[in-house]
Image (cartoon, rainbow, N blue to C red; front, side, top):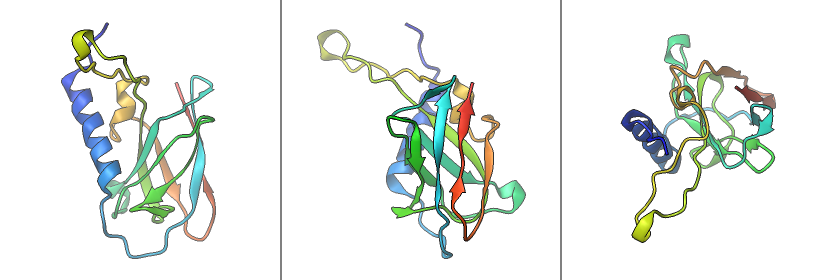
Length: 143
């Protein structure tokens, strides 16, 4: 079984922590954002998607995130509220397998189901714009 590099594990843990805690801030109204994530043509079930404001394009504010459903669909939330602040974002996608416990009940290290590049918003190559006052549909087809 291949070991997951420490960098990937740290990024995955950081991503999960951010999703669980939220980021606070953001004073304007949120725009509805939903879509579907496919990996190699199949729906990505149980994955996580995070939109990080793209500072290089002038966007600031809190992260938006969601968990993908069995059919790969998602609906973004920001700090527990439906939607995302208008602006430009870089996108991170993560999906981990749930391994069986190791020998003697030792916890097993989960394996990423996606290439490591999708764990880093700077490397994923995924970006989008959320527009105010409209229903934003953002579909992702990962390879």
